[in-house]
Length: 201
Ligand SMILES: [Zn+2]
Image: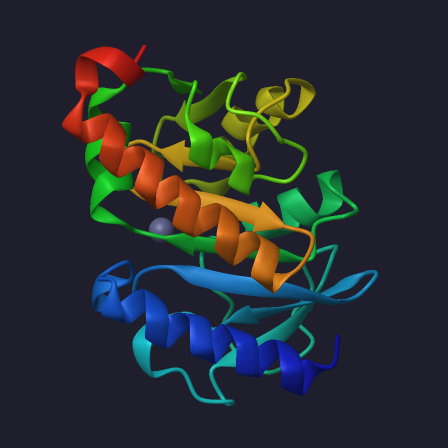
């Protein structure tokens, strides 16, 4: 994955996400792994619907910025995913309406089963599965958030988690994979809101 290709894909995703109202008011952040120990991530404070090639910075997996720009406050959560999942090469964080509403009312997890679109997630090839989507309590302290996420990595969860009243993180082996996961998840969360008694815990 070249840096130019990674930027191009994330700029394209930003325009799409803006069109879906997933990244209002400079919210959200996107990243891709560009080397085994290096990622490219959106800079802090930029509107994700109008990203230019100057709106990114490289950062080491250990958290050291490699370009003179301020990383997003939530960079730590991206790094945590890349460190835990060596196969993950793209992380997308957005504030969809469905994720924000459902994460606020669902309790500690959302469970999905018997839904055809679960097959959009890597490793799932039947609707006859029970899948857990954790809901992490929100915090402005990224260390606190990361610590709350950590226990879920030992469980078989979907490649995603919600942060309460905040939004959603998804990851994938590449950009198309992460994008597919996010699109499927937004559909499933929208279904869950429409039928809360059936899909929420
Ligand atoms: Zn956020």
